[in-house]
Image (cartoon, rainbow over all chains, first blue to last red; front, side):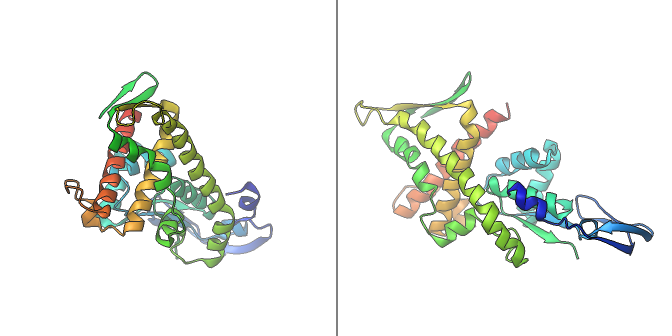
Length: 123
Length: 163
């Protein structure tokens, strides 16, 4: 994705005063919720988290998918294999969750390796 | 056919004319040729069709970069494959040397070709998992053999990368 475009995505200048509940997402999409706080946040901070999902594909080799997960996410081999097997057996696996911009970059990288990957907004 | 690692290159030797021809076809096979299913597989939606604004931006900014990336890989492979275009007797076995620094391009081009062939032929998961189908009796069988042969090469390259 071009740098010019990337700067424009999910990072608008206005700030918003809001009572905010803090959510923490781990890579599997689990959510923990902290007490609401009153603070000033940009719209980027208010952006809902996005999941990076990889879908099953009968053509891509299992060893290739494992290598891609190691390269793109820096996962150790065991963890990459666990996600690969989840894709293989369950049809999909959530590889990462977080803000939209890095999620887009991950999906772009995965498409560069020709994996079937999508962004899904956590509702 | 023998495949081995020698210093900084992968060597595919004893290539008979049939397998050499399959290798020569990698760049052409990787082209979707305007076939919608193949195009859609190489340039899949980032959101399964949801988020139309994001999809539109993706088409405008990301897809051209992906096209360049894929094309660059097939061009590297095509250049390596020129080793197979000698003036020797056409039926003689050949040897192909793949520099280690080109292995990522080969993985990509082989993957592109496998995905495009599978999409064009609408192979089912069952067909794709039948690695022992033989003999080659039709164009469709040949395409399936091509996918499996390219997959075998991918596996070897991956093992070499894994050390």
